[in-house]
Each structure stands twice: as structure tokens, then as C-alpha cells.
Image 1: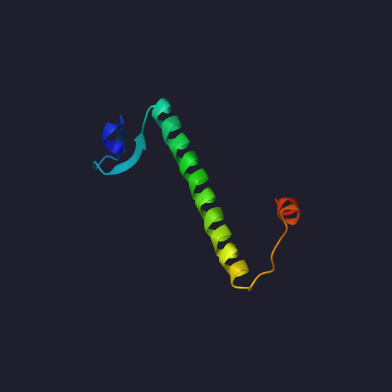
Image 2: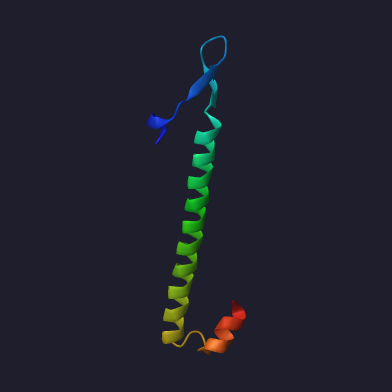
Length: 74
């Protein structure tokens, strides 16, 4: 991913890299990708929880819910 970015390094007098600069458009694209990844991770986590709950209901560890009760919890 970074090989396609127009990265500029800020260095100290000894040549040690201290910071980076990238064009704002590239930064906005990175922010969007991070936001999309965060959304994906939230969905994945919620689905995992849902599958665990379904198995617990099947095993009798949690009570069954009606569709109405389920939708009221949302």
C-alpha cells in the first residue's frame, strides 16, 4: 500500500526520519479505507456474537426470543 504513496520524510539534522508528509487526497483515501475496515470489523464482531447466541439458544443456554422481542432489542 505505501509503495504507491507520495511520501516525503522529515528528518533531523542527523538524517533520522522524524515524520512523514503525504498529499491530502492520499490521506483522505487512507482515512476512508480505515473507516471501511472499522465498519467491516464491527459487522464481523456482531455476526460472531449472533452465531454464538444462536448456538446458546439451540443448546438451551439462552431462552428463545420471538421475532417481536428480537426487533424490540434492536
